[in-house]
Amino acid sequence: MDYQEARAYLHEAGKYGSVLGLTGMQTLLKELGNPQDKLKFIHIAGTNGKGSVLAYVSTILKEAGYRVGRYISPTLFSYRERIQVNDTYITKEALTEHTACIRQAAERMTAAGKPHPTVFEIETAMAFLYFVQEKCDIVVLETGMGGDTDATNVVQTTVLEILTSISMDHMQFLGNTLAEIAGHKAGIIKPDTVVVSAVQEPEAIQVIAESAGRQRAALRIADPGRAADVACGLFTQRFSYGGYEGLEIHLAGTCQIENAVVAVEAVRALQDMGWRITEAQLRSGLVKTVWRGRFTLLCEKPLFIADGAHNRGAAKQLKKSIEMYLQGRRIFAICGVLRDKEYEEVLQTVAPYIEYMITIETPDNPRALPAEELAETARRYIRRVQAAESIAEAVALSLAAADGENDAILAFGSLSFLGELFREVEKIKEKKES
Image 1 (tube, one colour):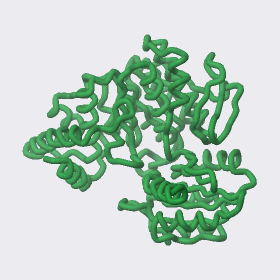
Image 2 (image 1 turned 90 degrees about the vertical axis):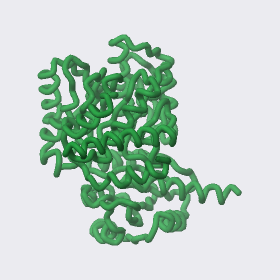
Image 3 (image 1 turned 180 degrees about the vertical axis):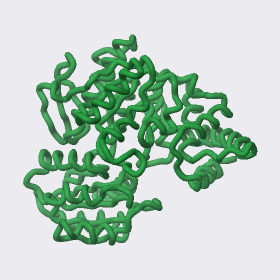
Image 4 (image 1 turned 30 degrees about the horizontal axis):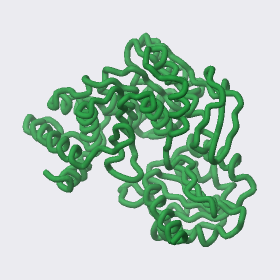
């Protein structure tokens, strides 16, 4: 098997769909010798902010001298981005080697009359094999969807669980109330561990507290209301929290101070457990954290920002960021969404701030909503809406329209189109500079 054959096998495994539950994952890992049992994990669940908190915590641990595995989804720039060690993507050689091993295990499973593993189960198993191979000290592990029945929840050697902000999303799988959804997310809590939770709605925090109690897990709340000296900005944001004065981050967006507070609380919990992380390493990790696609500034003239707001919780945060950073500007938007998301609610939330919207179809995704169908919905709330045939056309149209000094372009919606959008903007910037 070479790299292209490995990628073809992984693509083909997509036909097995998505399966909630741990049976298939447990069977696959048993075939592989249960590599996950040789690792330690920080397990993260939640609706919004998982990736940002993962980025902060893993960067701080790297700065502290630990060898840190990252497992993330979705990816923006490369398939191999989902599996990283100290910010370096899994190599093509390692991906090929582990895929070949997993294919043999999957063949043994099907020969025994068991279901073929899903692509997410295969990727998760591959991550565990690679992190063992790379001798990781700790793995920061992001759930795919939910918590209790997510394939990542096979891990039993969890050091710390983190629950980021929980809101309504994936209701067809997780339930129609915040309490039901929180119950699934809190399913990652393991016995006698420590749980750090963001501030949640009352019905969600009640469920989390009850779940922690049943597992004899200590619950710590990361409350951004206790942050002081808060200074927001597009390039630098500062705050004080947990005995640390003047902490600095370079991620924009109103939610990022909240996410950083969760990360600092998580680090404080790790310190209490004996993990060696100094104040200087904490500060350095926060400053060095990069997490693209979350109110990310792509260029300054015109101001061009990309944000993966695709559900009601993220849309509320995007609204706050627009009010804070883009007040008084004409906003030209690019939007692409998946059909199974609450895109109409997202549009309603941000529509009052949009001068003109260009819709696109998220490429290479069977769940993508066609650009014209999205445009029809958007026209209910926004006066000027146009459907583009490609992301490149949408970028060109937005740049042509945003010709005023106080104009801004805001791309938002599914994270899955932002990687291509970033590349198109980079091409245009390179042309201008040459």
